[in-house]
Image 1 (tube, helix red, strand yellow):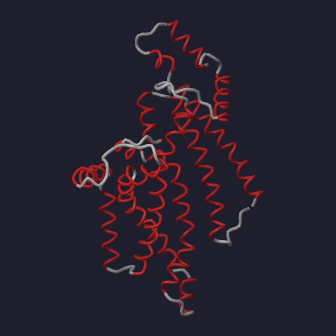
Image 2 (spheres, one colour):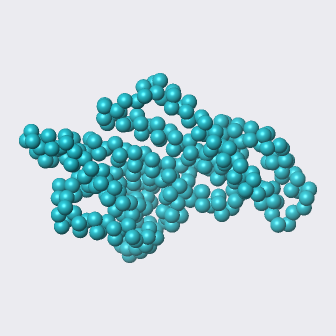
Image 3 (spheres, helix red, strand yellow):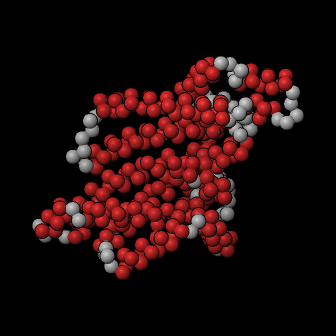
Length: 312
């Protein structure tokens, strides 16, 4: 397994190099001259030249690319153009709030998705099964903005169970008070597509030969579903969960924006609005790296779930 991990890490280098080149080309050729953005409308040629020299954008492209590579390796992307904070401090301080919301949301979504999918598989083809699928279709048709407005109005404004917005200093305060409502909204939005997907995974396994053999041996249906079927259906479930984890950091920007959560997603939106290129470049590169790492972890989890999987 160690040799497999080393080989996969080595194979990540060309992919990471491609990501770095793509980001570099997009921000240097398509993104325009950052000196004009920083100088503002009331600027002159001398101030623009000074800013270009400070940023290093007056250097040849190969020199700028080398500077960009060094920034990635040293985790030092300089300072934000909008706030003056170091980019590393921005990412480090915004990562915690995002994970406080997204990790419990992912755990709850996966748990309820699996449990409900197995429960629906017990009554597959029945009126209950069809009614649940219709409800999932309706739930998927409703925009997340509707969920946010309704939940904020009902649970926060009318009932006063949760704060409408805000973020505290302590972990447990944030987890149990400020992030509870965003987690409930995220769960309400994601459970319908997750249930439909996991139901498909489970039903694909229900009709396999090993399930018929287990039934012929007299095993109870509950054991067949929760042990044999779930174990084989867990491989595509793991793929779905692990592939979505890096994207969740960016995809939760609506929740973070509406609830005032100082997370990565909200920071990306603010950086785009301000044309804050150092922050955008750093988050883009690190999300790409996290995606490749999570793909490796997914392959390792395959073998942990099913020993028949061989890592070659």
